[in-house]
Length: 437
Image 1 (cartoon, rainbow, N blue to C red):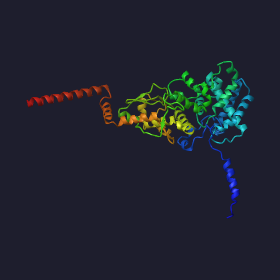
Image 2: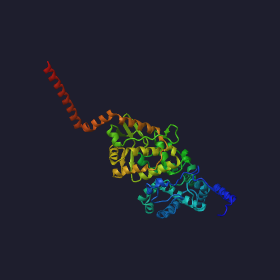
Image 3: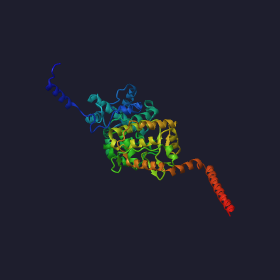
Image 4: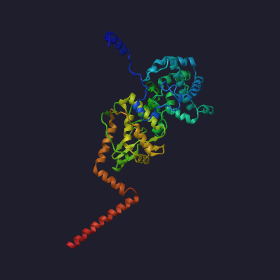
C-alpha cells in the first residue's frame, strides 16, 4: 500500500471541515418532520392539495393546483395598488432571509426560488382576501368549496410554510396607499390569518374575539414565524395558565402517569367541561372535580395537532406545552369507553363518529414525542388525582355511589334498605334486652 501524503490529506480534511455548515441556523423556523415522527402517519405531514414553499414544490400529485395558484397570483396583482416589478423586487431582496428559514438545503436557484415564493405568497394572500370579501360563482369554478377546506388544512402543515414576514411585506406593499390614508377596506393580514387559517373551531366553541386580536396584535407580527407558529401562539395566548416565554410557566424534569378517565371516574373523580377557559390546555382540579376544556375532534384534528407538535419539538421543545397536553389526554384515553365518558360529559365533540377512532388518534399522536420537562401545573394536578384515587375510602364511596345510587330509584331503594336494616337491628336489640330482663 502506497504511503499516504499526510500533508495533502490534512489539507483536504481542513478544507472539508471549513466547508461544513450547521443544519439549523438561528433564523430557521420551517423544518422537515423527522422520520421517527413522520412514520407513524405520513399523510398527516404531507400536503394533499397545494404545495407552499420549496419542500414539496414540483410533487406530481400537487401539480394540478399550480395553474390555480398562478390565476390567484395574477388576480392579487390586479387587486393590489402596486405592480409586478415591485413585488418581485421585494421578494428578491428578502430571498437570502427566506432561504435561511428552511432547515434543508433548497435545490432551487435564486431566480426560481423567487418565483416560487412570489407565486405562493400571492396565492395565499388572494385566497385570504376572497375569504374576507366573499367568493363569487366564478371563483367556485376554479376552486370548489371542498378544496378550500383542504387548502386551509395544507396551509397549517409545518413543511408547507412560507415565512410570515414575506407575506406581511408583500401585503403591506400591495396596499400601502390604503393603509397610509387610514382606509380599512383591507383588514390587517394578522386578522385575515386568525379568522381564516387558525383552527380555533376545534379548540374552542366560539369565534375570534377582539381580545384575541389584542393579544396577538400587529406589534407581534415580527415574532410570528408562519401559520403553524401563529396557531400555536393563539392557543397559548388564549390560555389562563400558559403564556409563551412566561416565567410563571414553571417546568420540571418529572413525568407522572395518571389513570384513565373511566378508572378515575370509578375512584370518584367527577369530570366537567372547563367553562372558565377558552383554551384546551387549561386543565383544572378542584377537590375531586377534574375540569377539562372542550375539544372538537374532526377529520383534520389529528393532522393539525401533529404539525403543531412537530413544530414544538423542532423549535421550542423547552416550552412543549402542547406535548404536555397530548400526554395528559393520552393518559385519560385508553379505550373507547374513556372516549364515551368524555363525550357524555361534553368534553369531547366527536365528528369522527367512531369512539375507537378517537382513542386511536390520541394514543398515536404522542408517539415519538419527547417531554424533556413537564408543566408544574399538570404535575400538581396529576399528583392530587393519584393521591385521591389511592385513598381506600374514596374508592369505596365511589363504588357505593355507582352500584347503589346511580339512579333515583336505586337511591331510594338503597335508603329504604338501609332504614329497614337499622329498624331490624333496633328491633333485635330490644328483643334481646326484653329477654334478658
